Amino acid sequence: MNKKIALLQSELKLMNDAASILKYSYKKCIRIKSKKEYTLKELDAFENLTSRFARLNDIIIQRVIKTIHSIDLDEITTVRDSINLAEKKNLIKSAQVMIEMRELRNSIVHEYIPDVIKSVYIRTLKLTPLLLDDTQLINSYCMSAYKPLRS
Image (cartoon, rainbow, N blue to C red; front, top):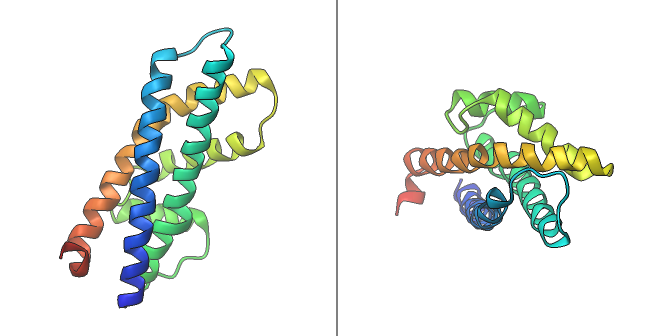
C-alpha cells in the first residue's frame, strides 16, 4: 500500500504542476478569445493551451484516477467506467463533462484542419476552468481519503 501511496503522491505532484502551467496558458488565451484570424503569437499561445489541456487530461485519467482506483481496489475495465466511478467518488464534478474533455483531447491530438482547430481553441477555453476545478476535487479527495498524504 505504501508504494501505491508514494506513486499517488508523485502523480498528484505531476497533476498539480501541469495544472499550474495550464492556468498560465489559459490566462494568456482568455484575453485573446475568439477571432476570425489569429497572429502567429496568438496561434502559438493557443497551441500551448491545447497541448497543456490534453496533457493534464491524460495525467488525470490515465495516471491519477487510475492510481486512486488501484488503491481503492476498484475493478475497472474501461475508461468510461473509470470516469463514471470517479464522478461517484466526487473526484470529478461530471462524468459527462470529463468525457467531453476526453473527446476534445482526442481532437487536439488528431485535428489538422485550420477551421476546425479554431473551434478546438474555443472549446478548450470553455472547458479549461472545469478541468482545473476537477484537480481541486481530486486533491481534496486524496487528502481526506488517504491518511499518509495528510502528514
